[in-house]
Image (tube, rainbow, N blue to C red; front, side, top):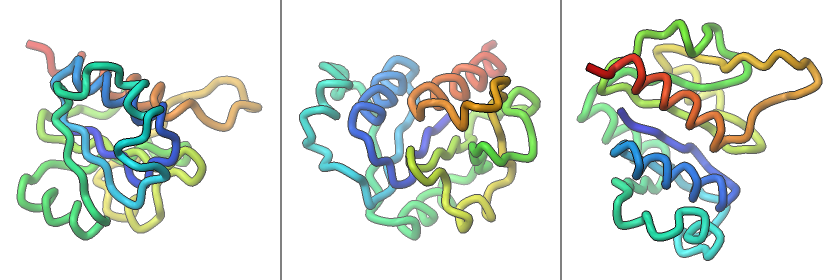
Length: 150
């Protein structure tokens, strides 16, 4: 299982996601440009002392990421409020890539167009546009891991 953040903007969100990835032995892929420096103190603080346990992969741009993804294989699952299927209905595989966009823009259309499945996480209150990025990643990742448990 792999988590991919495309153009993340908020350091504490990425730090929290890194901590979740460390706890679950999940690869974390960051696709630049980022809205912060990897050395950002807020990023490091959110990840606390877990950074040595994060299987972190940094990609200079989308093309760099696509090359790695094609080499490793696996389906692309794009998470978006405009998804066509509920994240609970997807049957996750161990080599899936869970893609999430920036906190302000979501996944770019060019990324969504390449996804094998566009998933949404249900929000019952219509006045709430979306969930926090780190919450969305946790919800999706733990559902995928729940399905894959042996």
